[in-house]
Image (cartoon, rainbow, N blue to C red):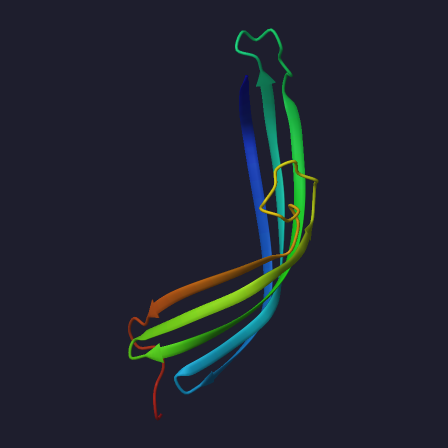
Length: 128
């Protein structure tokens, strides 16, 4: 069996509303977001000897997901260490046949990130 994909197009749009506050070396942030994904493609499924061929078919899918997040940061010299935890609030979209752990495809998910940022150059004036 062979599967051929052509003319794949994925468009993503994301909007975030976030607020943050710095307390000396410590910072906090939080917010809400919404992401939308549009996908289109042409596909063909055929047997190795081409005796069974689906011909060219068109598919499209749309998924919208909302999430909320919160984070904290610590500035140590030129470095800022940051962490964020968030939760997707489910998604609307097509029914999928694959699974992701114990939950549904569009189910709620918790995520976390950790990173370090180094400032380059002059970022702000102190005492002026």
